[in-house]
Image (cartoon, rainbow, N blue to C red; front, side):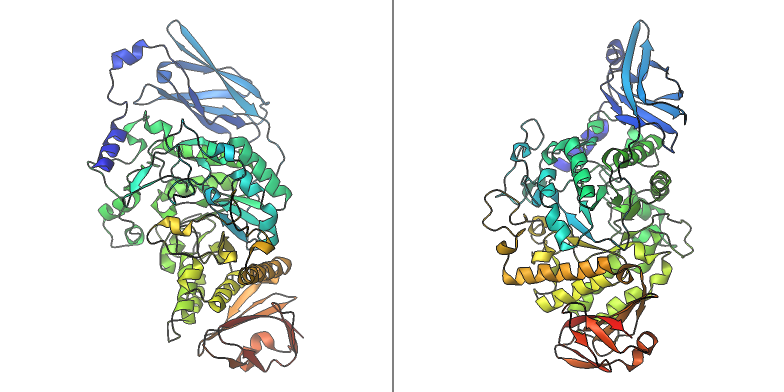
Length: 627
């Protein structure tokens, strides 16, 4: 009942008003989005959203050298105006005045056109990188003064409550860059840091905050509880100085129900509307199904993700411009390097192509990888550049590799058989021909929306090492969820909070500090050092991230593949059985012809006889071959 009421209130905001009363008021401009722009951008146009009482009833003009007001749009709600500006290549930085007139009233609004700086931005991530995923509210609290604000919809901060905010922030993450770098990571991906001024929501009988960050309420404000805009700028600069890239988490599909523009909605078509509340089915099949019903497809893409996250209508050109310009503004303002897109498959795909292209045109090196949670290669390929004859062709460079994720876990959980066990991993990679470039897919073993990796594999440390060996030696861009390197565990049941616990040592009063060697157990240190060893080797040896991949059919629970280039060959040999075996290497002659010895990358031990390689039970060896 409550969610239906919220839905109805959202859709009825302001559009039914006393027009005579509204028009009698003097006009004001309370917001301009984007908040500023730049000269010298490849994109020569910008559409300004102006908001305030009667802002849409004014007649606008601009008088600034090189800037032309092409068109002023009015919409259903008289409190909005949309101004299309063109900016000539010769335009100088400065402050222009937007002048609005109505009768005897003249209103002016300043708008900054800035010079672009030369700081790193849009550098991209590639297979040479290793991404470390952080949920900032749960990682480290560097500034307790910003934990909560009484004037926000959710004024709570309580670490004893798993569903409330805990106080982690950008300052805290910035204090632990050395830890991330020491682990061997080269990039940091935060779950969203934009303002989430959302009220508590009742989920499963518990009141929960939006600590995860996926309910935006102001696109142009970093959440104060994270530290605000300047804190984000400072973090990115500090990360770049440390040699780390930054991935921003984008959400185009929906916003938080408390978003400022939903309190006074610009037009009815700003969000997807239904006669009664309609949730997405979460079914991805209707999108690619050649036999599918249009009604099913529409429910998937236009239904709301949950009742408190209204679904934006990206086929509305004003919505599309708002989102695309915010993406460009974010990269230019904060200097982020790559873009992870939440709930990618639920978006309007032609819009996503336009948005991706706008980013790629401005920042050719930027990488974009979206979340499309599917369980087969064909559907996963649909949302990235592919070689399949789909009616729609995506231009997304990468994507989160959910197929390989589930395959690696199955390979560790299942007994070996004709198609199960490690065959699952092999089979997933065997279908890489559908992608234009599978090395741009982002691989992972867990994240903030899944069960923790260690728990999924039954807390088996041998299997833990196998999976991480695969992650850091196979194709793609590996990513790791914070805490996996120190054996954090748990399942999503009874709630997501179980897999989003605080990093020990990131908060005042913590009894353990696992950022430090002394604070970790022997087994936790072993896990950390294992990851570091592989990540460091991967980073230092281009063959491991840029070399070719050749894999052999699994046999009797063993799986062997090679990374190789013109200068080096590395063999990864896995035994998933419960007992040691001797691996006959004669069938790998294509890659081992002339090889006389090998170095065990993990132990630095030299192996001189490679005819039979001893593979201990539940072990993956990484062997650098020499001739």
